[in-house]
Length: 388
Ligand SMILES: *Cc1c(COP(=O)(O)O)cnc(C)c1O
Image 1: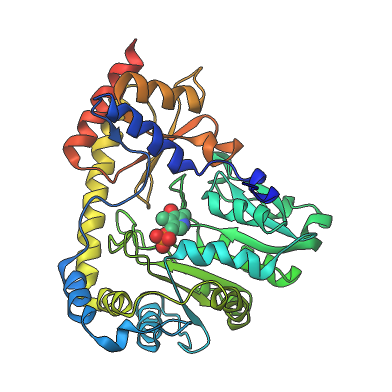
Image 2: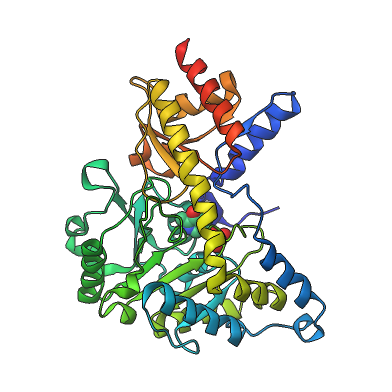
């Protein structure tokens, strides 16, 4: 078989690699605790499951769905944005349904950039932004996220010649993998930068609802003038514990969504209508309490795990949002050495920070999406693995 040359630019998908190692150890009888991937362990709230069941039998929904998302789903997203962020969206032009936000994130690059163009990508970061840019033949300019800058990129440091060819800037706050949040001033700066240089601003808002100690993440669309240059990717996966359902939306700049829709209509045919109906149910105000209950669980776990890791001599950053802990490796150990030691000596899978980009070196990421007793056990084992 002949594989397309473009595949040579793609590293193995981070989590596929970890999953394979975990599977190998489990095969050998090791009781592995997987804190590698961020995938909520709690079930989807019952009213959402019930809505799916109720709509699954509707023959109208058994036919091809609307390409841009069911009109009622788009209206529900617009109503949600108005209620949650005070942002008024035109459901017709400023909301586009997605088969999970990853789908839209992946396709956006194809709509905006190709050979000769530059995509500005934060690192460490979600791998999809950079990999898709490369697949599309565009050049990636990496924006380092470092602790001294609060894990915010330095947009002033982008060289002029790069900036002139840049078509797309990715931002992701609350941030995976660092757990960092962006203040309003940074969002304003990013909007101004993109407006000044005719760059599309893409905000990945996957963790907007997972905020701790009362923290409420803003939408970039709250910034005046943002909706002409910015699109935001909203996902139901993390807040509603619906990672398996594959539903999300892109909202914001109508012109950008039009371009994205060209790729999508020639690629997919939309998500199953009953899943869209279930998503509408999720977005109703009475389910805010379900989201909050999940967040409380992560917050409690964050506090337990931070305490246990400190006990073990580590110094994790304490996130205000996301369900990840970004933990500096013990002195003298690289991220990969740390992750390998934890997996082989303790049966605990974490993700080495360097897998998210070179500036992730010196950190590992722990996901809090495992039951409390497993997290406690994982901390005990990590502590043991660090002692020999
Ligand atoms: C989980 C995640 C996504 C993908 O979410 P889906 O809507 O399930 O595709 C996107 N971006 C980041 C940063 C994530 O962590």
